[in-house]
Image 1 (cartoon, rainbow, N blue to C red):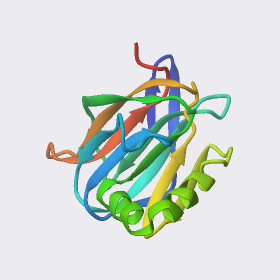
Image 2: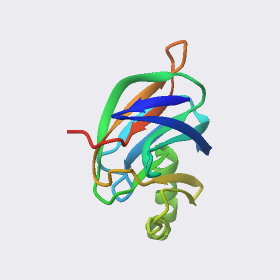
Image 3: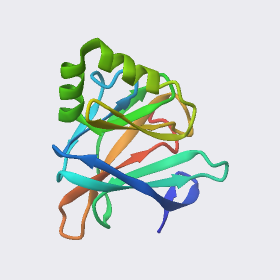
Image 4: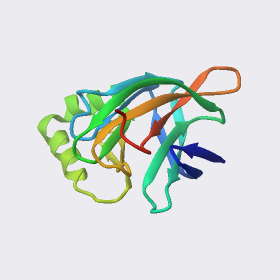
Length: 164
């Protein structure tokens, strides 16, 4: 599937799946995911992850959804200060850090030192999807992903350019 993001036409590529058992998804800077997060609720379970890459290979769009659909309303924006985004099941993340304490936080922060564009790490039973947006630091928009029946079945993150 091709989409137009800013001035580029992008082809989305499936890269795998992510689990969101509670259906409460947190999207934020990876270093501050308890602060300034956009929290979205949609159906729990396994969601397909797709990337839209620019000509330079940088991530412009990330779609996390259970089925085909279309971009819906803007749900909010989040800030990125360390050029890395974290997407996770919010309830699972809170439970993991509460049960693991400082050790769990250290495991998580150790995982942030990677430079890959996309990384999945597991800490305390929670999967964290870490992404490096094309434009680095800035504020980015989150949109709902709606199926043909008008039901939210995912989200789309637009990294094509930081929000004003």
